Amino acid sequence: MDRVAQLLEAAVARPAGASLTQLARAVGAPVSSVQKLVDGLVAVGYLDESERRYRLGPAPYVLSLRAGRRPVPGARHRDLVELAERVGVPVLLAVRVGGDAVYVDWAGADEPFDYALSARVRGSLADTAAGRVLLAHLPEAVRWEIVQAARPDDPAAAVALLEDSERIRRTGRETGTSGPLLPGAIAVAVPVREEDGARSEVVAALAAADRSGALTTRTDAVTEVLTEAVAGWERLAGLEQRSRDNHG
Image 1 (cartoon, rainbow, N blue to C red):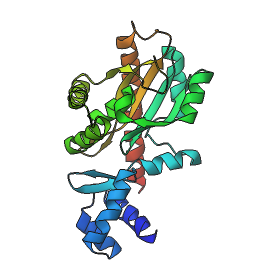
Image 2 (cartoon, one colour):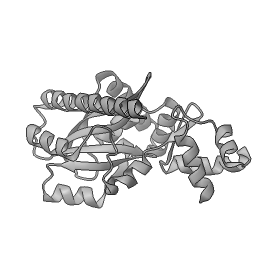
Image 3 (cartoon, one colour):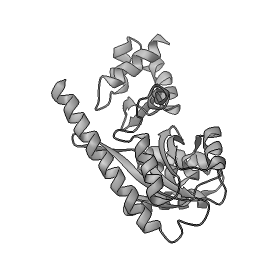
């Protein structure tokens, strides 16, 4: 446990990402023994791997949610409440943990929807509109690995999922089924980015979901509302980050 904590702290200390060698040096252990621990932390979302560098993953933010910390910079629960009232359907905020999308907050849900979300906040990235947005913006190698795991016996479905990812990156949104959580529901989802200097990373997905058919003729209008909200969050997060930097 001490070594796991040291690995997480070492990753946090290097915002641009730490190499496996740097992590091994930080905990005073051989690279071969650290590799298994790091792979395990990536698998459960405590570390993220990109181009052989490791940074803190989203899982700690999910845990800190109960402590009142925001898992998505700039986004507050009251923002979701206002959005749900504006678009007239439930809105949901999801982050990636491993190969799953995890709903960290939502508003405007009726009782069955609220119960279903509370009972199952985690689902495959491939199975929901929000999850597919998160999947689309992963590094290619990670995306291929998740797609292969999600569609292991259906190459055609795997190719279609990758084609969906390309379309999502091009259009900036996903419209489709919300998955097995609520059969028949349709959702519109857009990416939420975090800027850190020259780096821009998709850290969450904002979705509007509906079971009544209200979204079928309003997808463009709802997408515009969601996109405007996300832009506001990103500006606020940038201001907060600059304020922390100035007072650091």
